[in-house]
Amino acid sequence: MIIIMGNGATDAQIGAVVTKIEGFGLTANVSRGTERTVIGAIGDERKLSPDMFDPMDGVEYSLHIVKQYKIVSRDSHRRDTVIDVGGVPIGGNRIQIIGGPCSVETQQQMDLSAQHVAAAGCRLMRGGAFKPRTSPYTFQGNGVDGLDMFRKAADKHGLRIVTELMDARMLEVFLKYDVDVIQIGTRSMQNFELLKEVGRIDKPVILKRGMAATVSEWLMAAEYIAAGGNHNIIFCERGIRTFETAYRNVLDVTCVPVLKKETHLPVIIDPSHAGGKAWMVPALARAAIAAGADGLLVEMHPSPCDAWCDADQALNPEEFAALVESLRGIAGIIGRSL
Ligand code: PEP
Ligand code: MN
Image (cartoon, rainbow, N blue to C red):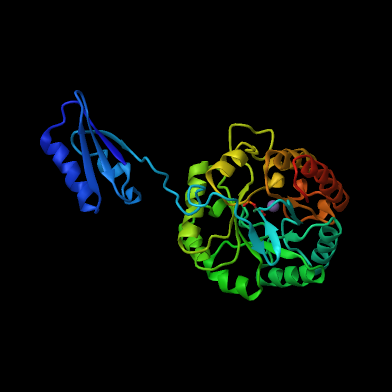
């Protein structure tokens, strides 16, 4: 971290900054120029932050020179990390499409969904048993019964299951049902206590981007999970809030190359919650794969009109199968498989 002193900073003010740096166990390097004095803090600067120095007398401003995220950074691990989800790799050459309904409704709906997901050639299935809904009066998910239905349906087809955890008190139940991938939703991205809890286990985690989170905040959220010991993290872009109202969210495809540069962890895209309409999903999905995403999280329902949640954005089984086929072509062109 470097601290730039204002023009005319006194020796006492410079000394106070040096004392503060040393108080955190770092050493200070004072460089006196003709107009400005610049103080460098040498050591693990992650303990320090600009708000510790900016209010001090004589300080003009201060800034970090190293990134705040460490374990998730590509600096700490040059090669792409491949996450093993019960034998299914996420992050390698092979692109994984995670399909399934927004929410777990009935056993029959889950059985049919699992059948179609498997028939399309996918290895992982999605479905929410605990739903984060805007209104408390709408369907909140089937809870533990939903996990049970999901597990039964997926097991018949050998599919790995992906489902959202909203409350750390449910973690034991998720482990009991052997949820293969724990999804942290957009509304929970900065629920730091929840992040710490999933950091203590070794189950793969899909960390969705907060709908108003910067890439750097998202990386820091992942660092919370990683700092607890769980490095099995998959980033999922699902669209961000902007001034645009013509679609549910704006799919930030730009974040794919940016994340690929910043982190060694896999990146997937959820085109369904981005567009919010089924007809937009194929175009967004193709853009995501072309941009280098390692996979997709796509909503598919056996009968979209009857879906209890996010009916407008669900593909029907035929549309889903056709999408997966079209993505095979794109994957081939960019030297990947599906
Ligand atoms: C979901 O995937 O079902 C979901 C609720 O997504 P998000 O957290 O991105 O809104
Ligand atoms: Mn949904």
